[in-house]
Structure formats: C-alpha cells, structure tokens
Amino acid sequence: MPDSFALGRVLLRRDGRSMSGVIREFEGLRVKVDEVVFMPGLDAPPEKPLPFVYFISIHNDSSVPVVVEGDGIVGQTPVLEPGGHFSYNSYHVVAGRARVTGAFFGETALGEWIFTRIPEFVLEVAE
Image 1 (tube, rainbow, N blue to C red):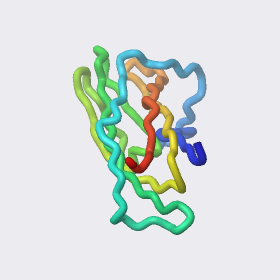
Image 2 (image 1 turned 90 degrees about the horizontal axis):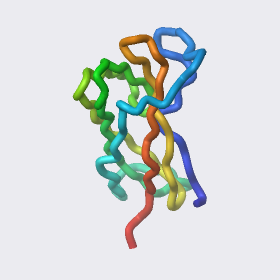
Image 3 (image 1 turned 60 degrees about the vertical axis):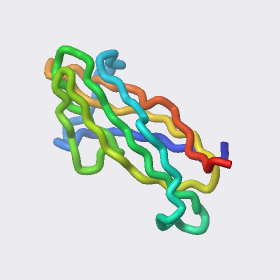
Image 4 (image 1 turned 180 degrees about the vertical axis):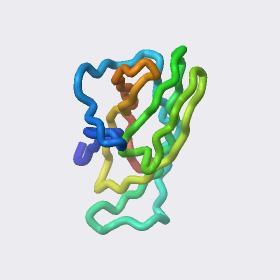
C-alpha cells in the first residue's frame, strides 16, 4: 500500500486534561464504516489526486454513557447514551490505494478511559 493513515488519534482532551493512566478497549463501543465513496469531482492536490468521502457511525451497546473524542470528529464531543449512536462523514485525499485504520478514545460516565478500534477500510478506485 503506498498510503495509509490513522483516524481518531487523541493525545490531550479538549478540556486540557491528559488521558493518562490505564486506557482499555471498551467492548460496549463499536464503530461501523457505513460507506466509502470515491468523489472525483472534489478538489484534490496533484500529488494526492484521489478524493474520498467516508461515513462512519459509533454505537454505544453498553449500559453506561460514553463521551467520544477523536481527530475525525472535528469540533464535536458526542455523548453516547446506552443504545445511542453518532454518525459523521469526513474527507481524505490519497495518492493511490490506501488502508485506513485507527481508534476513537473516550471516557465512560464512571470515569474510565477507553478506546474502540475503527475497522480497517480501503480507499481505492473501482476498476
């Protein structure tokens, strides 16, 4: 793969508190890649001429509220109640076929630092 990148990288909370201590993978939170669309009509620089839009949803299947943070969720810090979900879309340009991986970080209502993985997906132009 000539290009890859990660989504949802967070080093510091928006309120300035660091996410130090134990961060565990939270089984009650899941991410679904709903759709990936090649959008040749969107602007892209010559060195990365392939623009894609992707749609992602985060689902809280647990019994506790969760606050989710990540670079992909620009300007938002959704609170997911039990059974709730949050959907958003984002845009990325690549030079060629690319694999996308990453994670979202958050905090449960009990104060536990958590993360959930984004399932790997591929940005590629269909032949």
